Amino acid sequence: MNKTENSDWPAGIKRTKQREQVFSILTKSDGPLSAMDICSLTQKDGNAVWLSTVYRILELFTQKALVVKTSMQQNDMAVYELNRHDHKHYAVCVGCNKIIPIENCPIERFIPEISDSGFHVLGHKMELFGYCRECDLKHR
Ligand SMILES: [Zn+2]
Ligand SMILES: [Zn+2]
Image 1 (cartoon, rainbow, N blue to C red):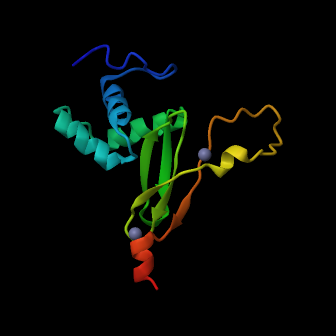
Image 2 (cartoon, protein in one colour; image 1 turned 180 degrees about the horizontal axis):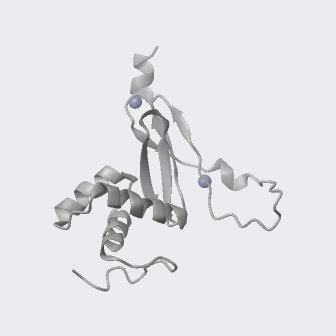
């Protein structure tokens, strides 16, 4: 294992081997991953991390705004993605669970009125769900 691989480890999070492993998987992925996906990727690495541990790490990363969580209404599933500077939103198909990227972000032009004037916004979440083209045809 290359020790310098994660030299850009985020501040404020205690560095452990398993957290590094999950972080590295998220860094290399170009799409959102479920905890299950991450779990099986750690198995491929030869350093399997328990699913419950993966969940705990992802919850921590989400709390620290390191990761963006997208919930899937339908089946209690969630996918996770690194909180990159140019963030992306996804529409989720409730028919086949396909995740479709949304090209723009309407929330960026939206100025929230927050009663706590000192509130420091770190990010936002948007949930969009419906039927993809194929599923939509089936439901007509
Ligand atoms: Zn679909
Ligand atoms: Zn956005």
